[in-house]
Image 1: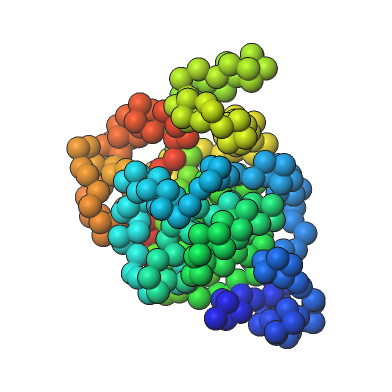
Image 2: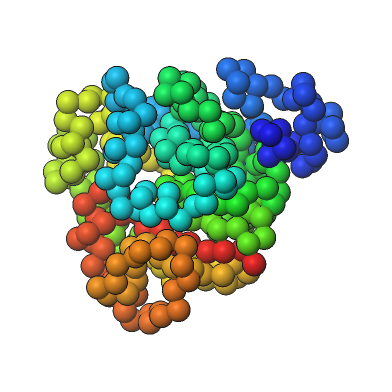
Length: 316
């Protein structure tokens, strides 16, 4: 089953049982049961990969177990909505899975989940956690989203959050992963919002001036005050990342329109006072002025943490 979802990143052909491409003959491997299907990337990709090799993100708490992981995930309304919206027999791809918490959380019932990332150190932590938790429906793959070792049209759902805004060209990265989605499949795209990110940008200025010794009003750092490694991972990811872009809701709607993806909705909702009940339900009401006002309000609601917003679309 796993090989049916993979492909040679060089020529897109199938892989044989020895991880050799049946088309161009390139030999790959699967050390620690993690297929290595990554070709050399551009300078930006290599910089980001090396950045996370030094501090895999987000990491696991000491003595973590599957129950604790699921309880933490379900404290997030978005995670609950995503899990509820995905069919229990879906084939799911998480691009930029990091240490794999969301991939493991989504691997319920008859689902098959592929967690793909460019950083092997992160994948090893995710694979070890899956083994420790007794989770069999998730597989981890080392590959670059720009030249993915994944089969085109193989996935019912693609989820990628906190990833594309760390690439040199986020739109090109979006266009690179879109062919992996089957017709009728859903893509869930989490990005930094240009407005919601403003509070963190202000905290970043203070952090730089203090030599990163003082970062005020960051609730994640407060929550991790007794976990030095996870605090450091958060500071590196949020305050010291070598590549970062920020986006508006209108911009991502434009990406969808440009690439033939049907826009379903945004989370949180762009409608003032509207509460999302079904993440994959199509939203028909959209007023640009209201959308801008909503995003300005996200400085208070989403800006307390990373300032991520999510856009959902369906490939016709």
